[in-house]
Amino acid sequence: MNKDIHMKFVAGNDFQFQPRAFAQRFFYKASDELPEDLSEILDEQNIIRTRPSGRMIFRQGADGVDEDTETLQQPPFSNPQRPQPPRPQPPRPPRPQQPADIARDAYNKMLILGQLYRGLESFNTSYSDELQDMISELNVVTFAMGRIYQSLSRNNRLPIQNQRKPQIRDFCRGVVTTSNWLRDILFDVRNLQRLVQNQNIDTQLVIINLTLMAQQQQLQQMRQDCMDGGVR
Image (cartoon, rainbow, N blue to C red; front, top):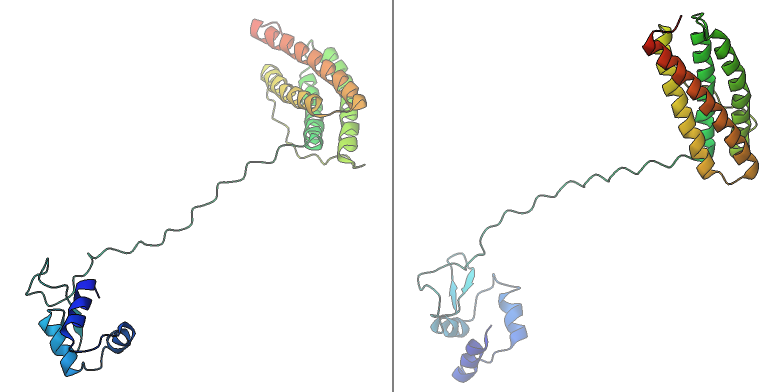
């Protein structure tokens, strides 16, 4: 109840206003009937009217209120916000590969590389003897990579082969496939060199890297001969 109405109640001396009793009487027990004297006072002050249903309507007075208004001004209707579904959490970034995982992949790729070399050798080209030497060299560095994996993983077992050998249908296309495969192995070896802080392992990785780089150059020469039509 605003201050002006309260002052009018006091000035009229028609009833003694007690806020707590007023609230208990009319807000918490709105279905009860008003005392005749209080109802008349409120009606004279243009504050309250009683609907036929018994509900009371409070009004501020003449200022800013339509005299014909019979209902309280309601706030504009607003659509309730629909609950939004929870936003999906962004996927976790992949876990960085550990050195043991890289060594395992390099070892398995070397096993496939040996099969690719033997596939190229089976075409009986002028590079057959050179490919045989490359297979022997590869066997040595593959064994070394297996030992590196065992050391990094602290596992005495060698990793299980989970790589599939690419198909080779002719020598020249096979050289391209084999060269690309070898390039992936070199990438793994260089990753290990950057991550592993062990002098013994680092020395072995240097030897493996130099051996594979030399074989990559040999494959590049075979590829150039294929382009020049010199393979026989």
